[in-house]
Image (cartoon, rainbow, N blue to C red; front, side, top):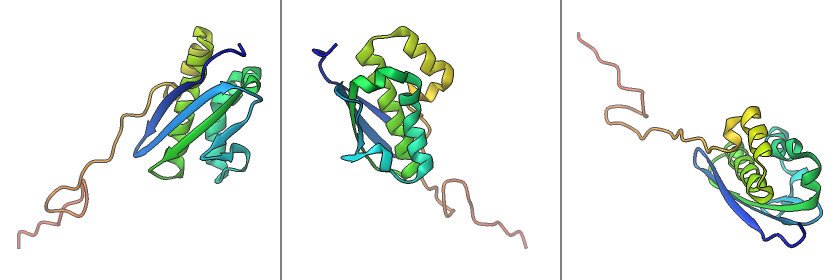
Length: 135
């Protein structure tokens, strides 16, 4: 497996877009050129570690580089975990791994299609409207 090429995938969540590249290596995971181990906040780091924990020992044989921008910290974490999981599935070409991810959480393999609604007229946001007075 040392002669495998790099595999790149993207993940999306809200307005965050993550691009992950996986290649053979020593188990390093970097998000925006920083090690994932020092990524803040803690909950976002745990969310990004989920696919790596599920893969187990296979994660020690590859290096993962993730570039993520847009959105907030949790949206970026959701986008990054989707991109990482898709890279693992494509890199190892393993149907069992794909089933494991689907059983655990479908959003690991499918980007979340929900987006915020645009602002509407006669209101301050997508749903809120000015109060109507009849008297």
